[in-house]
Length: 335
Image (cartoon, rainbow, N blue to C red):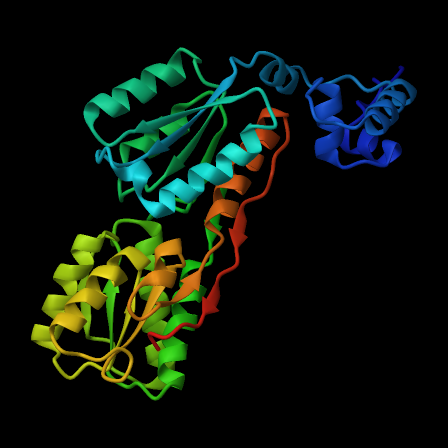
């Protein structure tokens, strides 16, 4: 009895051609932006090995409608003007401009926005979706699970581990920020958190708690914000009323830190002499506050860039691994 011939894999084609798996996939799916030399090498390997492309992956790659969606779980029309999301969009666009894919921006918190996104996915009017700013038991997670197009998450939602995501080291960055304040001799360190139903908010809070626990310091000086400048203003007023002796504050976003700095100045507090301040994100505005803001830098444009790259890899029939981007401390005059 003759045994059936073993099917040649894409990895074997890539190895024989001397190219990456993603490059081999792009050639096989006739995708653009592959050098002539690589294209010819892959074609020779396919012919020599008798490779037959996976029908499902090939269909996905060849039946594109020419658009992908960035959906933000928000109902605020100003969300795309936020410095953070604006930089994410720049990062995504820098990748997509090398393709023929258009970017559709959507807000998807309201029932109308969710319905619109669901209809768009069901009718296959988009080739893939990138989701950001998920809140707790967000209905967008259900839509993502049911979608028959690739979905990439920007950040990890609370209580849900998506298969494909790009995130920053929020926990490690917050721990680094708090350790910097401790190293500066601060002992009464408060925090203004982000939203606690978002992955970034909970991770940054945990990093703050961990650093204080290791140092044996009190971690009870906490007020919750929502990442906005307005919430930073409100939270700083509350912190000063409850803990007038605080000598430092780690703030989970630069936008909130901008509001907090203004409150500290109005209260006659000298920054950093009386209160040292560290933010998170390193948006452009952080360099121009009074005083300039020490912050944790995450590569925001790279976050968008890598989300788009991951989505393109999925569209090419690959299975990329999740990615966590590094964060680093940027020292300025607020500490």
